[in-house]
Length: 139
Ligand code: UDP
Ligand code: MG
Image (cartoon, rainbow, N blue to C red; front, side, top):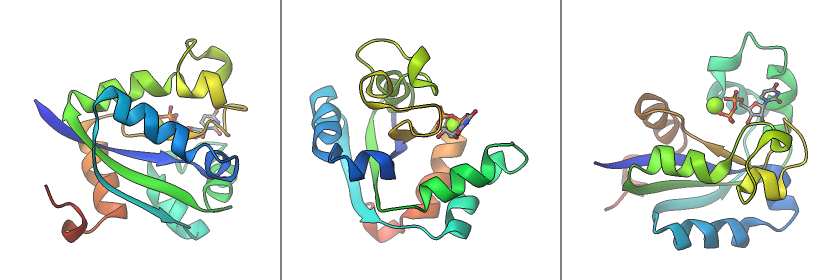
């Protein structure tokens, strides 16, 4: 089944000039880049994006990090792309991520882990709608 996922090249990766390297990996995987833009969220916009985590102890720090600089947001499309992108990302904690994954190669710590990816069709639908308008999602 062709599906869509929301990817974020997080502010730590953008500031370290890893944007091109990560996009290259996506193209190498055959993911279609349906939409892409560079944006900077306010802290309250970052809190809204991560609302599912609002009770977690890391929520405030996470929102500050995600609002701390520009990010590059993408909608990727492809067969089984939600899981394939999560596999390419690796585990949340870079120290536990499998060799060759983006987080293992480029992540610093459990917060500064370079990349976000939707974890289900439901979260992909919410996250894409939060960051893109329908006009930006031309097939
Ligand atoms: N995070 C953190 N501390 C934790 C767990 C997560 O700072 O103990 C941050 C990290 O940047 C992570 C994000 O919160 O990517 C969202 O957490 P989630 O559990 O959804 O991990 P992901 O789906 O990104 O692997
Ligand atoms: Mg998550």
